[in-house]
Image (cartoon, rainbow, N blue to C red; front, top):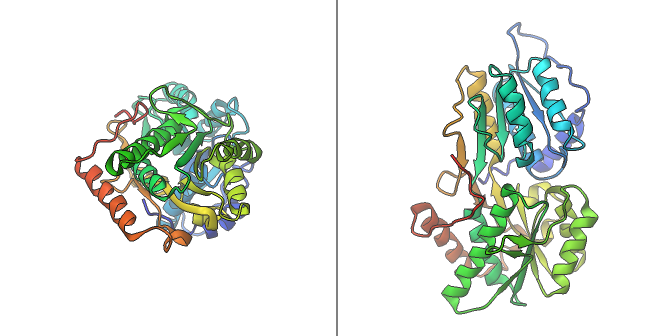
Length: 355
């Protein structure tokens, strides 16, 4: 999912477009054709989380670029209680396609979709199992496995860490893959790199319990670093920005693996980022909206599951670390991708998407 287009520029676009409270259509006057409206409800992380909300909005922007008959807008959820209200609001506004973003919105989306069977919904990171909801899910454990192997190979302290926003499947799937990648490295190299912040066997670990508070992200990663971790992977949306900023300020004491969208295109802390476990939400959303706008009925089964083989997930370029990652390690990480895509290596997680 090396869809890293211009999220840096996209940030500017987002800033300009961040009028979630004004749901009126700003019709591009001109052709008299009926506009196709695609309306997005963000999770509580908000549109500028530099993560999955940002990615989904980018997908809508790309769909609009490809078909200027599509109108897009969003409303930001400030709390989980807003999900149902915001979804229902867009049903009442007669939006053609309503996109819910984030695994936490599964129940609210299921309820809204069941009550409005003729309304087309889409959802990122969940599968409510309702006919009129098109699920877009991602087997990020596969790319996180690569990242775990990479982290183990790059660690000088022999300890790496990860933490999440909440213990929910779209978060823990990254942590499972990361832990397994480290374990695979240890087995292949006869090493004993430790993973702090997550135990795959018990499914217990470190969490901020929030996807927006950067100070919480910093607090959790500070604790991991204090225990010896020199590479940390936050899976906590915007809260992880507390970690990237602290890592950059540490002057190289530790580095970060970002998630969802290439951190060098979405955060100001590229210098501290080893890579990103990328989830190709923009392409999945763009394709779904363009198909729906073209009159295609989106099937809830099988929906879309992104993996390494279909480019739905990937790891980002190494950017500032390009010269620091040994060629041999890069080659091993590439081989792991090929082996996972071919089925030679099987990556498992309790949180993997259901079809």
